[in-house]
Image (tube, rainbow, N blue to C red; front, side, top):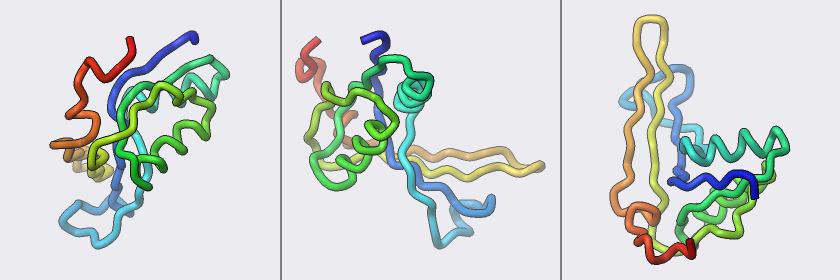
Length: 120
């Protein structure tokens, strides 16, 4: 393995059309997080990389894993367990308003992980 990225993958909920969170009834869902994004970017350049994190063993967690794996990232070291995936809400800025991000990571599977769970 050339690169191993370690961090939290989260469900990204983005408002459509530069709307604020309070203005929107809908959100576009995808997955992201700095470390997961780096691993995907490297895999797209055909670098051998793995992503290490913990996701809940439910359809949302498995979907996040599938998304990263889709781009060629090795996910064999991922832990499964816990109750929820961290979420972040994203409102794209405009010329006169900056981008805003609201994180909801409390009690996520990754945030509750103990170092002893990983086989370093």
